[in-house]
Amino acid sequence: MLRSLRPFPLAAALLCLTGLLFCLWVHLTGGKALCLTDGCTLFQDFRLAGVSLWQAGTVLFAALLLLALPRLVRAALHLSFLALAADTVLLGVMVFTAPCVNCLVVGALIALSFLAFRREALPADAPRSSLAVLWLILFIVNFGGVLRDLADPWSPLPARQEQTSVQVYFSPSCPACRTLVSLSDELNDADWYPVPEDTRDIWLIAAMTERLEQGMSLQKAVEEAHEAVPSAADFDNDLSMRLGLLRPDMLLLQFRLWRNHAHVLAAGSNRLPFVEFMGLPAFLTEPPAPAPEEPAVSDLMRQDIPELQGFGVAGFCDHESEEPCEEPPLASPGNLIDTSGMILEPSPVPTASEK
Image (cartoon, rainbow, N blue to C red; front, side):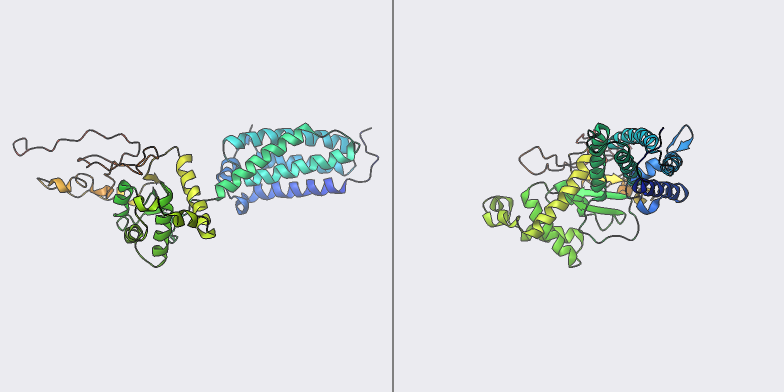
């Protein structure tokens, strides 16, 4: 009774065979060739009642293929409908976690198989499937998430061969950021990503990038960029500088800087400098140098925490005041960098009598 009177569903059978082979490939190899996002790693080893998604997918497509061979398209339609409903739930989970490219490929094959069996089993004037529409919306949202994840933050500095453990997001006009930039030669384990605080910063970053391409150090490039770009007072009255932002190269630069800014905001921060640590930074493993017996006031920025090499600055930019940045206060001994804007109480310097 379930046997279809229509011709053999060749398209549906080929889709099922493709899905079967793809699930087997991911299950046996891990599918790392298409693992472009963190979601692939997240869902690669996911198991439900001890069964992995790829084992379940292999069984599903094998069952659909076995139903397609004797032309039991209506039974195949019901099974593919249940599979599409399950995949819709998975797409909803990925919206709130991380999109998985391999999962999206399997989901697309499930959806296409469902539509192929539906075309064979139902008349041409059948109403549109609400489930397929909902699946498509979630699929588009997740596909956009994949494109977003592939847009890595942009740095004008040459790419390093090894993976660094520190990422610094800075503005060239932020005093606290420039304090870190002045130590960039010492922070060999750091990557640097510019983020503009205002329109003038975009030109500063453009000038800085040109000088970095000439082989200058980051500190020297920032200093010369400030000399090349008009001051903040003159910049506001310079119409040519504002119109220059419409040049193709400047539009591309602004798009790259939006990616950097979006990364900082996505990490839950709205202040600069923003420092990310991945693993244990190399400079944290170095033994601290012995502090002098009576440190001078000018040495307080580095006293007690020489292993941090400059991470004793407590200034930041928060995009809220009319001025681009706050001036960094003088750090006291024992203070670390405070990216949240909370200044720690200073530790008193012992006097000679107390010693």
